[in-house]
Length: 65
Image (cartoon, rainbow, N blue to C red; front, side):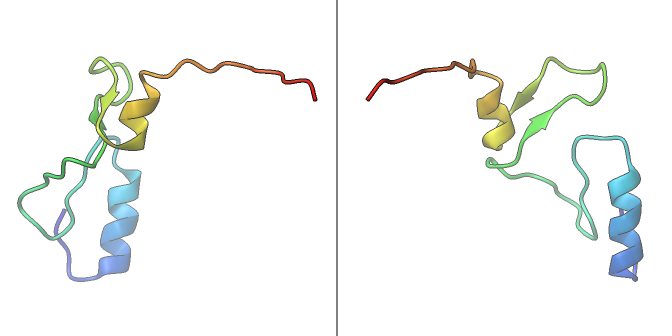
């Protein structure tokens, strides 16, 4: 997404239904950024905290003492 008014451009980018948005740049690539499908596309997330959470299973542990 390209625009001169950064506030309006960011507001537009937030409304887009997609996984990644580049604002005023051509290449969007970062190993630490989460990547994956949106809605019913893709098979989940990879990269970043969101990608790690795909591999975690919540567990409750109770300790006495």
